[in-house]
Length: 138
Ligand code: FES
Image (cartoon, rainbow, N blue to C red; front, side, top):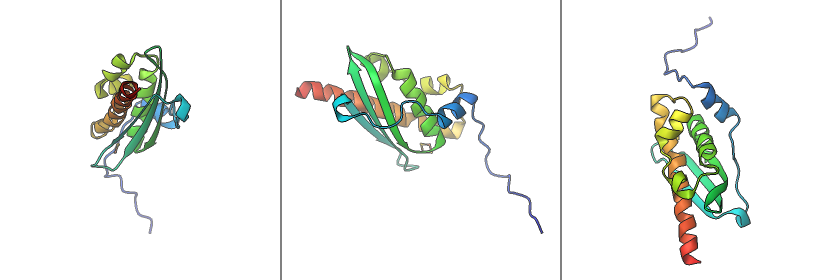
């Protein structure tokens, strides 16, 4: 006898922008070593997801940015949007991008996926710190 599928689980409603950035993530992959001015990583110990992010800075602005995600749809969509927001910004402007900025640019994200947007924000801040350390070290 056929049984009804279980529809009792939590249902996540994603905006069109979230689905678009998940299905067609922007700025994915690694930057070549000669193009990399900063590299950052962030992980979420709760879910085990991870993000790596590379930046190239020219004239004080983020000229290229790219990421690799080992994470959920929320992590991929928010990281993709983060890279779109950061492109062309000065490193100081990029450093001040918050997880709320990313979520707002996506038109919202389900409550239990909000933490995913922190991965990209933290990885970008870590990449900017890495770039500054490279400059200090010459
Ligand atoms: Fe881990 Fe989304 S559930 S980053």
